[in-house]
Amino acid sequence: MNLKIALFGIAREIVGQPTLELAAPEGQSVQELLARLQQEYPALNRLSSLAVAVNNEYAAEDAPLHERDEIALIPPVSGG
Image 1 (cartoon, helix red, strand yellow):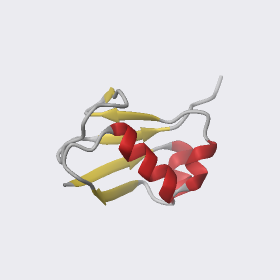
Image 2: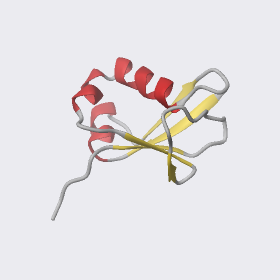
Image 3: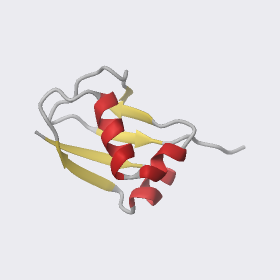
């Protein structure tokens, strides 16, 4: 399956583009996706946290992904 991932904040800067398209096995979990991205982009490991939203809701690590899901990588946010 093909996954489209929107990137925000520092995650976008690390990857160097606002979106990614990846081929992944059917039913890949959020945790497996994160592990893959952290391997391909080691600077992501330096972030204190990295949330994944699937279809506009924060997703659990064991949540399976599907081809038409809207996936977003959301780094920690700071501000005042």
